[in-house]
Length: 363
Ligand code: PEP
Ligand code: MG
Image (cartoon, rainbow, N blue to C red; front, side):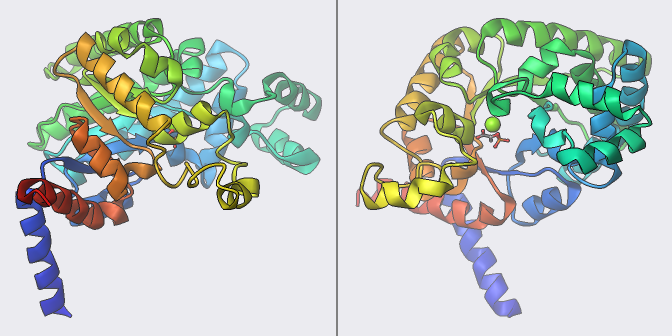
């Protein structure tokens, strides 16, 4: 088995010599980051920070944040979240060492954190120590008809800017702490679900203020790179303006597919096999990158982004990131890297190499 493993590692290192596109991994936990590192991913392309709060007591903290009714209550919960996030990021930086890490600010559709049913409501009222009637009224207040199109991503970040301030502080403090251990990095911060340049300006000015404060407090100088997730059709259309404020654009093909088709990514499974059987869609666009429709938006967004900033870094980070077809598309259109789940990294490295060899040999 050891010999087989060695042969496989040799093959992968040959693949790395010939491939001409970067491969990063999506990772939300230190364990994922370690897997990414073991598979020689060239950095983390997407840390979904809301996923860091999907389990255990952390869900309650997230709910406390969402249900905070006064600025003081919000500040109190953010103060408890800050050291957790700082430790999360420090650990990931420690694992990734000098490799780039792209952290996405919270993109939590609120419904994922709302209690389910009457019992859920009662339990949460108890945990948060608020009267049931108040709890019910607050949940009603926050309920949305279309949560995936609602108070999500940057919209939450702009409406309640203290949340992104806390995350930015955690990222910068982790950067400072890492530099004391000899890990010099430029953290990448990515804004989710953008559809307008002004959203980027508003977030950027807050992040710059937090960075300045952390530099002044710590006496340590550091930089950060700001980027935008292009996952709404409008962001692709406005990529030229947006790129003026963004060092990198990362295309989120999950939401971009959902919004291009006007089709819920969580419900499509119910009829997709019939649709594919009837050849309405050639394939399930959530599994195979739809080169005709979504691909055209990717191409348009990439071209416009480069117009706004010729050296903008381009990547995709949706579920399609590790597919051969998506890698081929990204190579053709001059993308810098793809980011995929950690376990797909070795196959992505091989696919990228195969595509590069095919080009070289003209086959
Ligand atoms: C995407 O939309 O493609 C993406 C990567 O973000 P998420 O899946 O977290 O919405
Ligand atoms: Mg998304």
